[in-house]
Image 1 (spheres, rainbow, N blue to C red):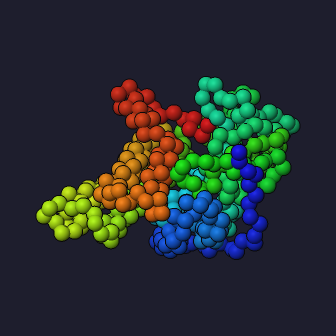
Image 2 (image 1 turned 45 degrees about the horizontal axis):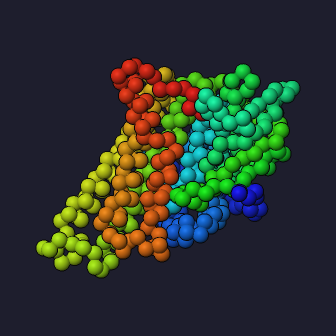
Image 3 (image 1 turned 180 degrees about the vertical axis):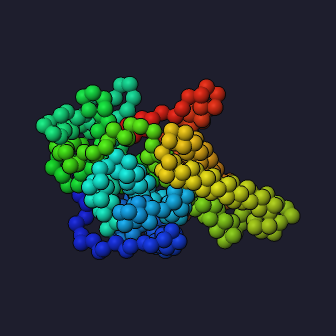
Length: 404
């Protein structure tokens, strides 16, 4: 049974204004060093990282994807993914907040009117956090799923959302639901708008402190100002989903790096680890050294494919043609599957090399595997292989309805 979530009331300090991609990376690394210190304790005891999330807001990182004409630095997507990977290496639950946040900002960039973009981008620059809730998709959605009905110039929204990533930490909530005619309606409202109840009901064994939850909506009114003025653009070929999936890949990459770092630390410092008869210590064991090298090389390859996918998203954002969107979608699918594989492989290798000693509950090294397993369930690799295979074999272009 979940509990009703209330965001901690506090006065937020003004966010720092980041001036360059290099500064964004430096700030990400500085934050990550602090986030990593208590990440294991937060995971074991499910202590939600409210203080860390406020530090994230003050850092200025929440505004780095804002276009330059609205005061941001319009960061390249490969650098955006690297910032998220850096944070995910420290604590992937905190990094997941950014994944949803940047997904919403890309939807605003595509579908918002000029005044809406100016207003909402300004909120991101000053440190506000954006979350999102979606109706269930599929042929037979739950009858309690989100549903809209027209009401004057706006809409009334009722129902229960599907599980929503990081919703507990949101200042603003983007709502995506179909209207009576099955057309996508998108709106952005303050978290405290009348009728929205956020339930802290996440009980997954991984990503335990990411602030996931469920939203219950009671006759929420969406006025004309809240509904994205150009929402019909969201149903056309865009890279909104590509940005979302690239940031997912960044989290996978961070988890893999963290698992590798934990493996090397354990192998270096723990006595009694098995080694071959010709090795005096585990760090001299050829099999151990080789396996560490294999994981490190695959992480490097995953980093490179994220950079390639990010550059293709950049190209599509500059020239939003269907061919550019398809090209970006296929490249991002490759990045997501490869990073998902290496996240799981790195987490498994930790225990393969460190042995039974590493399985002690107090060490909490299993959090790397738990985080990888939960996060890679968001969009299973088999779907990506099918998408790419259908394109190459049958000429079927990726679906355009990724927001629902």
